Length: 239
Ligand code: UDP
Image: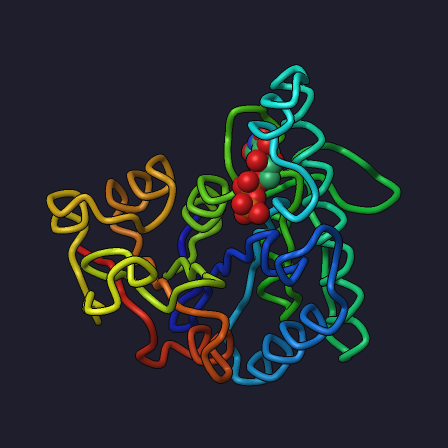
């Protein structure tokens, strides 16, 4: 789907860790703050889609380690993402923002099914579209879904909000405090230097299709609104 002529359309990936503030469940204070930042930039005309993770509830791989069937655990993980979607929807609507949740697993009472052309139409009308339930398929991650949705609905950037780090570093800054942050880096250098930007499937989708990724920290002052506006923040990974 082509991007809007002259306008900007971005997709922001918010991990479940963000929603839970590091705990299981949803931290309303954090979600309210995120919603406020998104609401604050919508009036500037940028179209915003969101893919929500679910690690604050369940991850299939962890449930498998505790003896559950992997695919069933993954479905639990996907259902967890939908709770985060509804929390974000609620706080956005409290700010007067029109929203739609679209899920990859059909659940008509709470969300629309994922229909890309309809999602694009919502965005054109200034609505925030929140994608939940991942790809609807076990063994995938919401990072990969974020890259896929961004490509399919014609976003010009994928914004990856991180909670523990504010960009891409030459080494893990939590282990090596002298590690330097890249302001920009090419896909090729990320691969050559074996840097951890996003999950490998998500990264390779972006690299193959030349979709720029912005990795930035949620802890940064107004990080989300600055990233949505296209201000220099974090690290930009591009061709
Ligand atoms: N999941 C899945 N298929 C998908 C997306 C997610 O099976 O397309 C499951 C998987 O178990 C994953 C969990 O949902 O661990 C939560 O998603 P993710 O780990 O990507 O969330 P995040 O790390 O962003 O919080």
